[in-house]
Image (tube, rainbow, N blue to C red):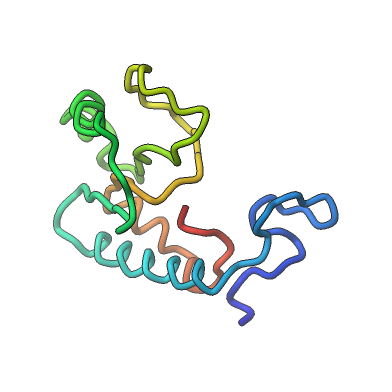
Length: 141
């Protein structure tokens, strides 16, 4: 379909011959997942609630998840980011860079591949829906 990004160029890095991405061609499963997210974003965008937690079904919370959440996601934080599109990605794929002893922190503009877990407001859902029907050029993770 012309609605789905094709290689070349790589949908992840934008490169052609220099691309070193392991998955530079959009898989059917990724497209289906994206369409599921679009459906969730539409429900969030039309909701009367401001904030929503969007979690994939195969996500695993570590033993520190509740502690981190309670320290970082406060009423003040949510109030501060209401009225503008906002998504807070929660966690990332466990790997060598994961350190269980580090204190929880909010890192602005950091994106890590992960099974999806995010807190987003209605305005962010509306923003994500813009143009996502015409062309699929990203994955949900």
